[in-house]
Each structure stands twice: as C-alpha cells, then as structure tokens.
Length: 271
Image 1 (cartoon, rainbow, N blue to C red):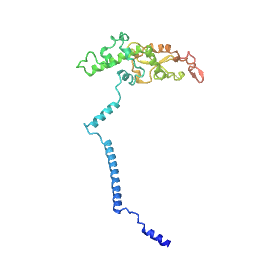
Image 2 (cartoon, rainbow, N blue to C red):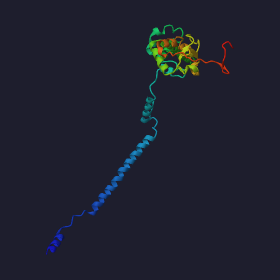
Image 3 (tube, one colour):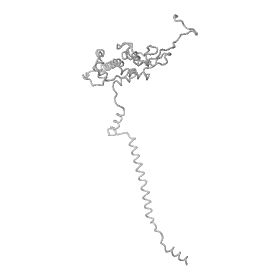
Image 4 (cartoon, one colour):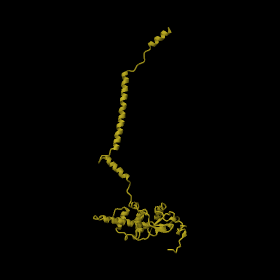
C-alpha cells in the first residue's frame, strides 16, 4: 500500500516548467550577433586612427599649420649675437661679455676711433635696431664690412672685459675645464695653458698659447684659433690671471731635456 501511494504522489507532481526553445534560440542569436559588431567598430576606429597618424596633413589645412607651429617651436629660441659669435669654431678662447658691461659707455672709451661703422657694429653686438637705418643701396661687400667691424669691436671689448673681476672669473671657469688646451712640452706633463696676445694693437699678431709651467708661448693646435687677432686677448691677461688665482700657477718643471750622443752629454759650447 505504501508503494502505491508513493507511486501516485510521483505521478501527481507536475513537471517543471520548460523554457520555450524559440526564446532560447532568439536570445542566443542576439548575443551572437551583437558581439562581432562591437569588435568591428573598435577595429575600424583603430584603423581610422592609425590612418590619420600615418597620412600626411593636407596642404593648407589646420593640421599642417599645427605641425608647422610645433616644429618651429621645437627648434628653440633665437640666441644672442654674442652667444652665436663665441660659439663659432675658432672662437673657443673667447668668453661671453656681459651686456651690461658693453652698454656702459665708460668701458668703450677710445674704441670709436679704432672701429669703422662703430654705431652699427655696436647695434649688431647688442641685437638692437639701428638708430640710423642702413643705406638701401648697401651691397653685400659693405654688409660684410659691418659684420667685420662688429667682430673687431667685440674682440677689443673682450680684451678689456677679461681684465675685470667678472671676466677673470669667466676665464677661470674655462681654464678649469681645460678649454684653452694643454702644453705640448713633454716636461710640462699636460699643463693647462692660457691664451695670450703678442700685441695690444689690432692686426699686430695672432693669438698664442702661454704655458704657466715652462713660461713659453706656442702656436695654437687648432688652425682656426691661429687666425684670431691677438688683440682680442691682449698681452696682460695671462699674467694678471695668475696673480689673481695663485693656485693656478704651477711649479716650474724640475727635469729638463739633456741632449746626448752615444750616452755622453753634449757640451753647451758645441754648435
């Protein structure tokens, strides 16, 4: 009897509700169809973005103007004439003169008679607009003369500036970095040198290299430096420099070269 009752209860219970097959199929179809569309849109956006990056800007468009502005700004700001001139090859012996020193007329006393086109040359050095405009019919040769006058004026100002406290300090920094070169003499053991001029008069001689250890002068190793006027440095600078910085003056070399023939010293009287 119990088994019969149990069997009846099992048969009486209704079956669980079943989900219609059509609904499941439609949901599956919707999920399947929606996913590839999103991926295709993402890939298309990436491809379009890469095409914009790779394709050059259209001439005259806003993109071209933006690239021109960015490229011009990345090139850097304009440098002054003094920095440009001191950065030229062969002018490594010069330091940058302070513009405040140049603007003081007292420091330029007596130079107006030594430099042609003095006013225009001074305007070039200070990057000023000339008070008196240049002649309209000025040719290239006259323009080169004005540039040469600016170089001469700056060199003569430089010779005075390096005798001041700021100028000596600027040259001392270059001396510590051995920017003036080393002595070629073997016994000097690579002693750092200083520039010197053999004359204070313009075009009186080219610049030389002075060794504080052997106290002799030599030609610069760089041929471009050999073309520099010695008046741009002057005859006083290296000696005043060593008096201002006594620690920079080295001891004289102990060893001197002795000529020998087959191991015997050559007498000084032998010519």
